Structure formats: C-alpha cells, structure tokens
Amino acid sequence: MSTTTTTQTKTETQSQTGAQNGAEQQTRHSEVGHKSLLQSDALYQYILETSVYPREPECMKELRDITAKHPWNLMTTSADEGQFLNLLLKLIGAKKTMEIGVYTGYSLLATALAIPEDGTILAMDINRENYELGLPVIEKAGVAHKIDFREGPALPVLDQLIEDPANLGSFDFIFVDADKDNYLNYHKRLIELVKVGGVIGYDNTLWNGSVVLPADAPMRKYIRYYRDFVLELNKALAADPRIEISQLPVGDGITLCRRVK
Image (cartoon, rainbow, N blue to C red; front, side, top):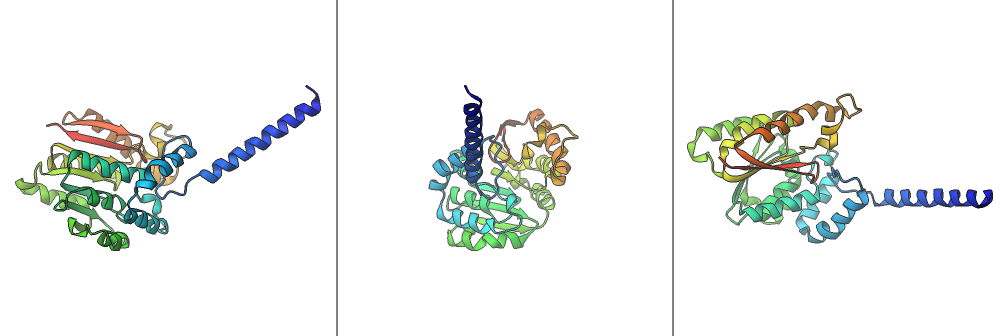
C-alpha cells in the first residue's frame, strides 16, 4: 500500500471515528436523573426509546419534563427505574407503602399509579417546596389521595411508627432515596416496619460507580463524601440474615431486600 493510500486510509479512519464520536455524542440522552452504569450511552438510549418512553404514562412524562427544569434534576429517579418500580409494585401486589426521599415525586407517582385505589403511601422529605412542584401533576393523575406527605426528617417519624405495635410488619414496600449517611439508621427501623415477605428498595447503592474506585481516585466532592456510607450499607445488607437481597444495575444501582424473618 502506498504512503498516499495509507495516509488517505488513516484520514478516512479518523474521519469515521470522529463521525462516530459525534453521533455518539448526539445520542447521549438528556434523560433527567441519568445515572445509568451502562458503558454505552447509545445502548441506554435504545432502552429508553424502545421500552421505556413508549410505555411511560403521560402524567409521568409531564412530571419528568417539569423536573428537567429544576437545578437539582439529577436527584430524580430515572425513567427506566420508575418503570421498574411500577412493575415491581404490581408484581408483589403492594398496597401499604412508604417512600423516604420524594424530591418532585417521580418515583412517588410511579408508586401511586401502581398500587390499588385504596392503597397508601407514607411519603417523607425535608423539602415540601420540591414536592409541590410535582403535586399538580399527581393531583391531575387522580392519585393524590393515596399520599400522606410529611415534611421533615424521616427518623423521628419512623421512631414514632415503631412505638405503635400495629405498625410493625405492616408495610408491603418501602423505597429509600434520601440521605445516604442515614441509610443504615433507616434500615434498623424499616426492617421492623416492613412485613415478612415485604420489600425494601435502597437507591444509589452503586453510587455513580464509585464503589469500585480506589479511595484516592478523583471524585466529585459529594460522591466522595457519601461513598463510604454506601459501601458500609452494602456490606451490612449482604450480611443481614433477616433479608434476601438482589443488587441491580438499574439507574444508579438499587438493592432490593425481601424480609424473610
């Protein structure tokens, strides 16, 4: 092969690579709450466009669009995880549920749509203002009556619930997407409140992939701060004989815990 041909081939290859990179950049989704751990953004976009967006209820799309305009939109549950939670709740027949960490209410709406008409969600968040961003959409969807929203820290509410024996083992499903440094404190209480056979879901248990990084690896400040708490939680859940677990690479990682005793 001549030098000219070789140079042309390299140039063409570089051009093709640049085009591919450009195309890949274009397909990088603008999904609110994007926390996918898939190596290929294009593959994640395929999942969204093929299986998630076409089946997403209009009210959830509306809430996702509202949340996209909020400066903290990365805090929200991603659309694929919302779909997963909705289906999971239907599969286990959940009726009495709890959510710690609500933000604008995307996962809350997914839950409210999944549970029966007389189902309930005890929802807790320290910021009512964010919740009220999504509340009009939740009301329009006709499911606001299922939600009992409590503003403030969740731990005092959980302690109060535990004081009443009627609450012990009474919840079918509990979803936690809140302050990671309190996850173990939540678990100590939630294991008493969820029924045997019920499920607790802990979000962000792969924490942006940082769980496998060396301690001195470059990380955003908030990732580094919470990383050790997430690692501690993962070890504790894996060793807890009261639960069966499955850690899934959905969103930023979700660990499902089924209480067995």
